[in-house]
Length: 603
Image (tube, rainbow, N blue to C red):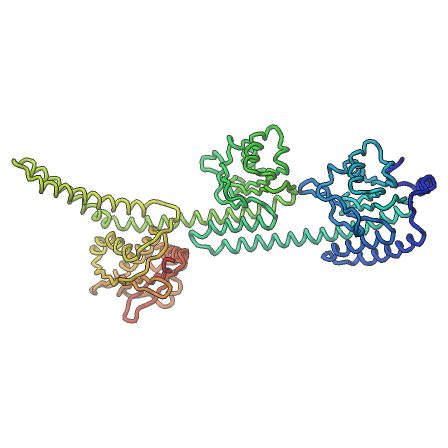
């Protein structure tokens, strides 16, 4: 028996040979004709956002007017390769349509739909032997007659419009099939418009997401970028329904890619570095500035066997990885992965993801450059303090030498005063610890470290900083006093960065006092508790700052000093803002200037 959509004469013969098979009456066909006319008029102007609801209504109307039992629209899903029902209506009390993926339940029917032939079955006895799996599936859902018309959406077969009877067998005359094809065409056009609208909305949504991520990253200060990048990765994962998004950086020795930022729904899994050992095929592809698209990890080719093992161990089912490059040279990558399900990665997806990756990578590079500039400025300031640094080290070293020489003389005596010798040894140990502390503090200032937030006592940090600067201030004939509030709250912050701010402010104030020719040079460091936390002010009695220039003192690369780089105060303010505080500058009523740093109290 021919199970394709038949010619009219074939159906007529079929119906005469099968008197037990129900035929649609002339009245049914006329009523269906009216329904069809209404559908055609309605769907041609239907707004895309109303398509789903109206399809459900239309399916019910068709089933009822033709005295059928069930109607479904099934579609192929490109993202995971499955085939299932998107819309369905069944008469109350009758068996519903199969749920889930239908590819294993109806392989013969699906093959005919993909070929464009469709399926017409008035009785399950008409099914050929090769459709035995489909027959069993029909029987499980009590289907006695079935017709599937290919559904064309956007110029290709996207699924099928199917009708079934459960209460009795049903014939499918050619004139009815022609009309069912027309219904499929109406639905296909409506779904195509809906798909186009959804793609447009997704594209616009993606553009908004990209703009939001970029806008979030641009104004950030040192230390805040990492969290913002992870948040951006999380938003990217939410937008595309992903399970893991990762930003990778190429190692300096070109030995591999390491994950620098990652958001994962399963935060317990740690990603390994991607290199020629762990994932050679993927690494070689990315190094060649080409993207990697893996729809199904379990279907990777033999040359990617290592990747298959590694990715499956991570629970990964699908991956898209795009290289990020500057001037044609690969500097990193952005990867997207799914764990809950497999999915397809359309080619048009790739440039969008590359764009997101470039925005995130640019933020990482900017953060790296800011950190390098901050470190350079700190080292530059320390370079100006060579006399103070030498004095800081010379004091304990001189004490150690003096005590050691005294101990030598004592050992030449007979008898040796062991009590005094022990005291001298204790002094040597104490001075050694003092020298070691100076070296540790200096190493911390010279070394470029990651941001380390800890509890910081500001008064203690100020005393430590003044000790480092004392000799330099004496050489510049600056008299420094302090007015430190005894109940000053501690703050959370990076000790080295906060000390850099103090160094900059005090050194700048001391340099401003060079203008005090024939006048006493006074500098005061003042602290006070505020409602929000603590304020530290560095106050001098110098010439002050020209009112027209005062608003520019924190601008990058703007300086009042000849040959000045103009980045010290800008960096100081960015450090304080990153700590949740701020920095202000003002002229004093009696002359000179005050720079005040505000920091929130430790929570």
